[in-house]
Length: 372
Image (cartoon, rainbow, N blue to C red; front, top):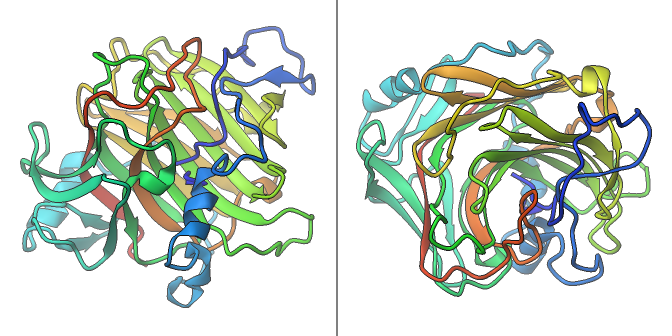
C-alpha cells in the first residue's frame, strides 16, 4: 500500500478546497492530507515498505502472468454492472470460486477456504477470513479483514487480499463495508481498494522509481470521505513522487481537493479542466461507508482513469481523470483490498491516529478484476 488504494498520498491536516475556494490554477494549495511523519522515517510509504520487507517479490516482478495491454482507450464513465448482476455470474459456480463474465472475473468469497486466484495475507496479528457470515452481503458471506486492538501502525500488519494475476488496464471493483469507528473516533485505520505494481526500477528515466498505483481509500474516522489517488512515481529513499489526488466528501457533495503532488508536504498544485472532471459531485445524504456495502470501482485505460461508487443502485462518478498520459500508470499491477492501522494520516479537520481499542473488521462481499 504504497500501501497503498494509497494511502499515502494523503495524511493528516485540514484541507483547503481547490474547487470553489478561489484558488487559481498553479498556485500551491494544501491538500486534505499532509503527512506529518518525516519522509526519511521507515514506513512513511507503507506500501513499498511492505513490499520490500516481506519474502515475496514486488508485484511488478511477476510480469510473466500479466496480460497484454488493452488497445481500447474508451471507458464508459457512468455505465457499470450492478452488484446484483455481478453476483449472479458468481453464484452459478461453486461457492468461493471465480466466475468470468463480460464485466470481468468476480470472486464471491463464499467458501471458507482460500481461493486459487487470490493471496490471503494476514500480518501482525490480523486475520483474513473468507466465508464469513455478513448481513447485507448478497449471498450472506464475505471475506472479513480484521486488525486487532493495539495493531501496529504499518501496512506490514495489514489484513489483505491480493490478486495473483497482474493487469495493465481494465475494470476493478469491490463491494465493501468499511469498519465502524463511531465508538473510537480517534482511531487511525485505512480501508484500501487499489491496484499496485512496483519493481523498484525507473523505467521512464525521470529519476524517480516507477510506481503503478490507483487508490480508493477510506479512513475509519471519516466514513463519508473518499480519498482517490493516481500514482506514477515514488522514491522510498527520499519521498520524491508524482501523483494526482482528489478527496470527496460524498455526504456533503463536496470536492475537498484535487491536486498534483511531488512530495508529502501537502503543497500540491490545484488541477482544472480534464484533470478535475467532474467539477462537482452530487451529495449522497447520510452516506456512510461503514453502514452498508457499496461498490467501489476503478476503470483504468492508458489515457483515462474513472473512479465510481455505486450507492443504492446509483452510480456516482467521483473523478473522471483525463490528464497527460505520463500521469497515468502503465505498469503491470495486482489488485488488492486491505485494512491497516495508520498513525500519520488523519481525515479532513480531524485528528485520528490512535491504535484501535477493539478489533476492527472490513467486510468484502466481492472483488472483480478483468477477465483477460
